[in-house]
Length: 64
Image (cartoon, rainbow, N blue to C red; front, top):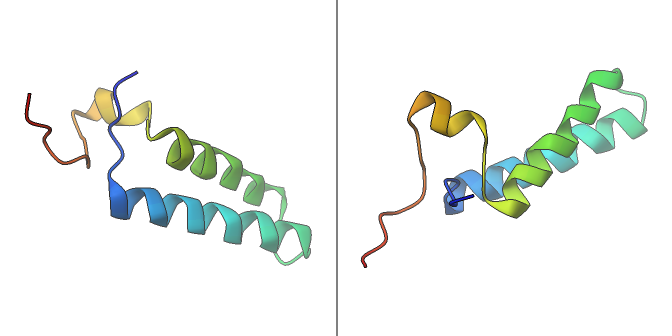
């Protein structure tokens, strides 16, 4: 898997995922908040499986 999640996108995914999970644990939102696990996982591994299907990438271009 080639990384396709860039710096700002990565930080936003992890932060939003943690917020969603915390809100779920506090009972503020319903069980759909556990989707935050997916956001944290894609932020940590730097790969979003939806991005290749849409032809997107937020990673900077790497010189070879």
